[in-house]
Image (tube, rainbow, N blue to C red; front, side, top):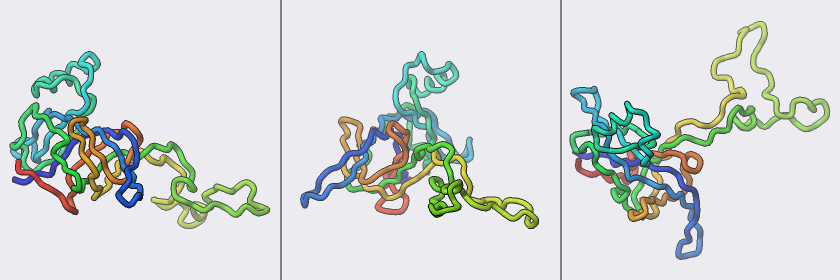
Length: 219
C-alpha cells in the first residue's frame, strides 16, 4: 500500500544559493531526523492508522518515568518531541524503526507544517492590516484605533467574528508544494526553497506533497 512520506525536523534558519545566471534563491535549512517509530495505531484497535514519531535525543534523566516506559517499548531512549503521523497502513512500520531524511530527493515537493511566530497581544493594524486614522487635526488620540465595534440600541451586542485586537500568531500553519533544493543525508539536513512557518529551532513536520508532484513509497 502506498504511504505519504513524513519526518519531523527543526528549523535552523535561512540562507541563499545562486543559480547559474547569478540570481539568488532563498533557502530554508531544516535539521530533519533521524526520527524513531515509538508507537503504531491500527484501524482495528484505535479506529485509524497512524504512527507516533520521536525526534531529537534527550537526556533520559530529564524524561519522566511514564514516558520512559512508553519509549522503552520501542527500544528508544529519551526524546524531546513526540508527534503522531497519519498513514494509510501502519503495518509497514516497525517499533524502533529509524526514519531518515534520505527518503526525500532534490526536486521533489513537500508540505511543511509548523507554528507561526507568536506576536503576543496585537492591535488591529498589526493583526488585521487596518489602515488607521488619518494623521490630521482632531484624530490625535485615535491614530491606531479600531473604530466603532457595533450599534448600541440594535443589535445591542458586538457580532461574533468582529476583527478586534487580540492574540496574534503562534498558530498552526501548513505551506504546500515547497520544492526541495538539496538533501544532505550525512548531516541530516534538507534545504527547502523559500520560507517555512516558525522561528529558529521551531518544530516542523515535513510530508510528501499531497497535491503536487508527490512521491509515494510502498509500505
